[in-house]
Amino acid sequence: MFLGITILGVIFIIITAFSVVNASRRGESKRSSIIVLVITVLVTVGAITQLPFWSASSTHDKATQTSKQSSSLSSQSGQAFATSDKTATRADNEKQVKTQLAKSLVKLGTVTFDHASKTYTLTITNKSLKKTIKGLKADPSQAKAAKWPKFVDNFTKTSQSLKKALGPGYRLVMRVGDQSPVLVFKDGYVTKNIFE
Image (cartoon, rainbow, N blue to C red):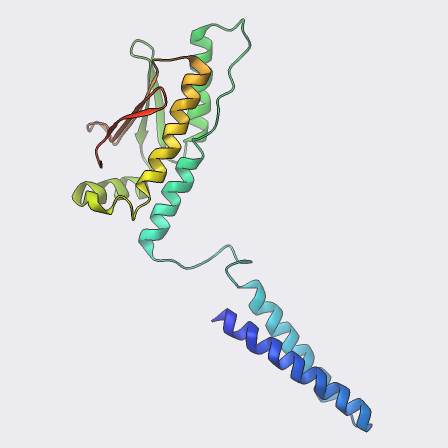
């Protein structure tokens, strides 16, 4: 809709500009043409600012919003972890990585760490992601439409970052509540994905 208003506005600006030029050549009053020109410019600029390129609020269907939100939330996790210098102990580094994971995944859920099994667990609390997972459990064929592979890829990168920061043998587990894990990663590889 705003694109149409923008196009029409540009056309009206051109026509009104010619009208102002003609009025000045004929020695007629330019006041009404200038008023129309100013109003048209204001409406056109307003329409341009509402175009999706400029506007942060674009309208999409609810499934697309959910998958984009999940994808953007998961992309926050694809970062490398900064560990302390060489004098820090492994336990210190594990604790620091847990803190960084918890901070970057706060929108998705809570992060815990089990030292004995070298496992970081993300317990999902995000309602949108829970709804997506529930829907995918009902119909796994929708995984591609929900951008699940991109979501998994982002967490694969997180697992690679864990291996780079702490060494091999660390797992990253995603689960909803006390249910069986939805995703399990180890050393940069997916070891379990219930939707594949």
